[in-house]
Length: 385
Image (cartoon, rainbow, N blue to C red; front, top):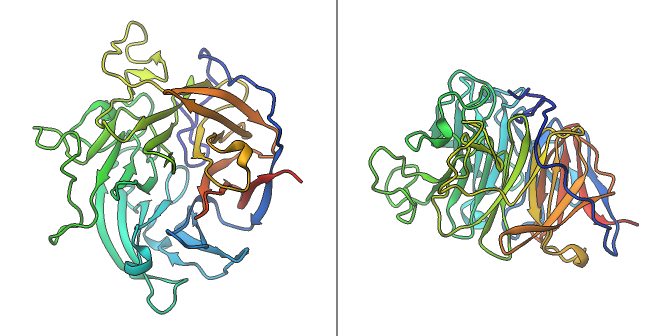
């Protein structure tokens, strides 16, 4: 069973597994982090509205802060601390801005409430004060019961290129997924969900007709993919309809999955498998129909929990365009690979001055990448001076 060090399902030091990523000679560029902000309270997520130069940083206790013109604005954009249960793996965990945010001012948040359940809510920014949101504008979208355990809450929201809202939930906690939630398609835990949050009627959302399990008995139609343990961070590649998922493992392996948006309905294998190894049963597990990770690494050498990132599609560092960057919460560092024909190639570790406790990566409107540390800092990935 893993030990919750901050808000991920972190592992104890394990044994076995396929080994750390191979170190390949660095290309003709050195990378570094340029400080952007400090003094934040447990920052765990960063996002920007479409065509907006501001950076919005989620603080785990229940606030969203704005970085504008290189400065952290003192007053929070949103403060819902009173309704957020924070600590360990719980808290306000992410924000996603509606594709039409510039006109409707809608954004969505993912948090654990005072009962420990997962809540997705919609809020509206002020029409007259763009750096302020109306805390009273909350509209409930989705409640996912999370009884019994404080860990494995998932935490990611993101709008896909199809305009639908994708939601990553953890398996419900403990160790080994005792209820087998991740494989049970009648519950919403251990899944990637896909919702249409522009319903024509009075409901909070509708299920897209193209969701894979629509119309099937005893299956939740909100499910887009399943078999995940704790998909803490996922992201879409701007250059194509590929979804990358950093799924935190149990005691042996950390995995990154990468799949096209179509076909959907994939089963990533947990708890049958942990990465490419059998978990339950420990040997001779049935792998038929499972989608295995494109990359994995073991939890030796100080690794404990993958922090999923983004494919770089900015313009400031052309040498690394197309590389997927990620980290590990305990060991830290900056790592990358290039996805080629469904396989991770050119796996690298970078000497970029990226420390440990990396909670998240973020992307601005131009595709430049940012790295968040649980200690309170935000840095921008740049060419080393």
